[in-house]
Every structure is written in structure tokens, then in C-alpha cells.
Amino acid sequence: MSNLRWNIAQWAERIWWRRYLRGKSVAEYLLWKKNYWQSFLQKISVDEQAVKNGTSIDLGCGPAGIFLLFKNATAVDPLINMYDKDLAHFSFKNYPDNTFINASIEDFLPAETYDTIFCINAINHVADMKKGLEKLSACAHEGSQLIISIDAHNHSFLKKIFQLLPGDILHPHQYNLAEYKQEIEAAGWKITNTFCLDEAFIFNYYVVVACRNS
Image (cartoon, rainbow, N blue to C red; front, side, top):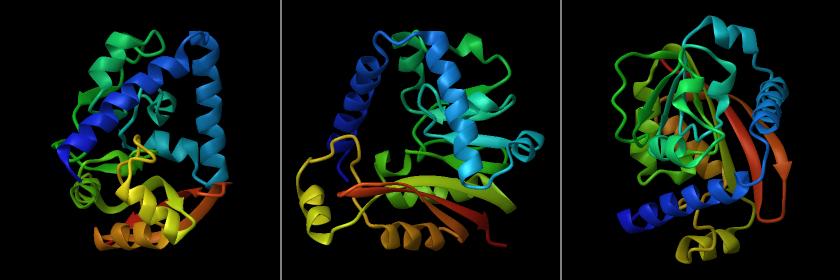
């Protein structure tokens, strides 16, 4: 994917969050988001307490990622400094126990590995899918758990159209579920579960749970 298309997607992402959060109560939104993430983990049969007891990283975290549930989590996003500047709903000072790193997934240089690696609504935003998935693997040790979500195409003809045209500017990569799974496995992960959390005509929303191969 060209850097231009990725840069446009990042610009659009920043604008989207400004518009989406405009007028929303900060306290009410953050409470709703925490409840959302707790429900998310329950739907995919992941024990929240078990994640809290280990180390975790939220890659492509956005301003209200799953890091909200966990102290001492690492959170990485190329726009995180902008979110701190732009949005009343996110501030570094509100999460003193968490570590925030302003970097793309591909450019992030992990200093350690993690027990749980989250990449939620993020992998189809990266500039280079292969490098992004390789970086998820670089954050893992044997037995690490990956929780990654994707919007996967349901129709080959629409997938091709979206690949050729900027029909979905926030998501530069356009694949079906089988293609995403193939890429995840090629990066060294063993898929243990796949959950469909939402169905729509063009895309279904899936969460893939995987463990790191030895």
C-alpha cells in the first residue's frame, strides 16, 4: 500500500474521532467504553482477570482502547499524541500506570514480550500488513495469546472494487476472512478460535484468538 493512502487514512481517522466524540459526555463515554470492553472479552471467552494478572499490550489502541481495563498495560498508536491534544476524552495523565508510545505498529520497537497482545480494529489500518503482523509476533513469547479483530469482506466482487477504489478510506486493506487467517498463521500464530460479533452485507466483524507457536 502506498504511503499516501496510509497518510490519508490516518488523517481521516483523526477527523473521525473528533466528529464522533463531539458532544459526548467524557465520563459517560468512558464508562460505556469500559463496559463495552468487558462485554467484548466475555463474548470471546477471555478471562479479564487472567489478562490483568499478566502483561498486555494494545497495538493500534486509539483514544479509548482495551487498555482502559488494565493497569500497567502498554498502548501503541501513531496518533496517540494527537488524541491527547485533540480530545477531551483522552489524556495521558488519566492513565499514569500505563505506558503510551506514539508509533505505528510496524515502527514500534518492543523492549519486552507480552502475555496478551491485543490488536483490535487496527490491523487493516497499517501501511504494511505483513510487517504489521510480524511486529505482533515480535511482541510475543511462546504461549502468548493474540486477540485480533478484523472487518472481513463477504463478497469477492465488492472486495475487488474496494481494493481498486477508496470506498473505505479508513481501512486501506481489504481482505476476506480466509485471507486474514492465512496471513495471521504465516506470521507464526496458531488460531484457536474465531468469533463473528457482527454481520452485515459487505463486511462481517470477526475476532480471531490465536496462540504463539513455539
